[in-house]
Amino acid sequence: MLKLSIKEIIRKINAEEPFHAVSEDYSFTLKIDSYAHYICGAVHDGHQFRKELWDNCLHSEYDRWYEEDPATKQMVQHHPIVIAGCDSRFEYDLNRAPEIAIYEDAWGKELWKNPLKTDIKDRSLEKHHNFYRVVHALISKIESKYGGAIVYDMHSYNWRRWDREVPVINLGTINIDNSRYASFAESWCSTLSNIKLPHNIKTTSGINDTFQGNGYFLKYITQNFNNTLVLATEFSKIYCHELQYIMYPEVVHSIQNGLNNKIPLHAKTFYNQFIG
Image (cartoon, rainbow, N blue to C red):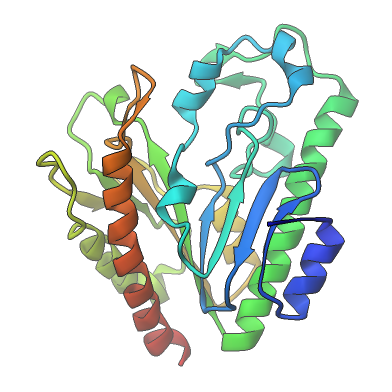
């Protein structure tokens, strides 16, 4: 893996060069094995939390981990194009617009002992800005090459905080072009329900059940590109014990294997139906 500047990453994308890189500030990774017509993203996979924030933060490391989406990059790591955040959403949230990307409070709890200074916020927002410069270049390249693209926007959520039964997989679709893609999103939801999981976990799936797909990653791409579909795909945290801070690697592996099979076939169908 290379450490590259934003300028160099964008140059390589524009030149259609395969590469594996981390940004020079270590805020995100981008792997491009080939310029396929589909992209996988894991914007909340990151757990890094820069040291100058530690003493001022009221949340523990566990508190942060609980609200992050651990292992979502691993779930899609073998696909041709994978972009993933390295930093915790508690520093800045890549799935929020810049003006609200830095939390004042998080899930009902104050986040900072003292308000963040402007220069500290600016360093975080620069990373947010640079991530979307690369996203824009990447989607532009794929759309110019194929006429369209599909993005699998991977997330997870804490099922234990719900007081009702919730699906293992939720697809958020209210901000996609449903006049064009509703039936295709429904087919993705149905496909996901066929992923086999261990420990007799029943793979239920639903659309706009727990979350509706209001993230900035989806909105940014949808609003800036006419022929790219973003599917906000959330797994409930059946792959860890969210209260005991324990990962279940065998469940993560099963999800990864299922997506290794399902995503390329689904993306090929999308290409044939909407692009090719």
